[in-house]
Image (cartoon, rainbow over all chains, first blue to last red; front, side):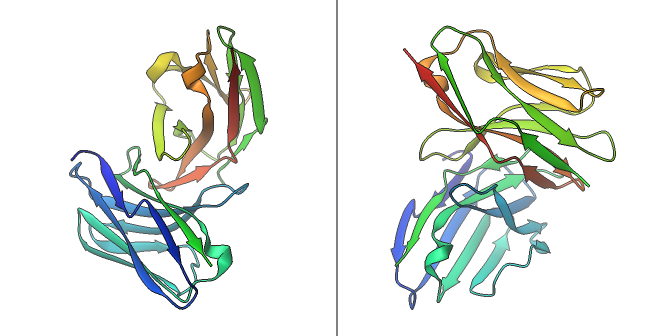
Length: 111
Length: 112
């Protein structure tokens, strides 16, 4: 497996469910990111991890909880989401300040 | 503060004709600029990047972009559009060494 992979590719959940999104990078990078892509809105940076430490949290609601157990894996834990959280969630990785490589995304629908 | 403005939300061209996707940036210092492409149901793929070397940057799939400081522009061009170029294109500026700021995107349609 090469590049950045994300699972699942599609997820439908109710507002009371708890689920997790997974991202894995096979590029040896030292930084990982979560983005939210909603229709007709610019891509929004949610979280940044550098060397496995969270360095950025752009005022994301606490119902989104990231976890970075090592430099290759990044999770986004979801609980009690709202319908407006339905979006494409993209993971990316980079080495230092160079360009970011993106995964294919998880299409999330909250009912 | 850094920002990017993509001047067209939609661009339509015929196959074989030139493509021009416009982007203006705002940056308080010499920026790093990127163009990413997103095909339907796919993640973002880097097309090309400018990092203060040559002002004319060549990317993948025949795309190129020219950095013009006097116009604060970084327009994306391709001499001849192909059907497979139909996608959403994002102009991006790098902020504070590790944060990307995305434009709102331009949807490119290519007609046969």
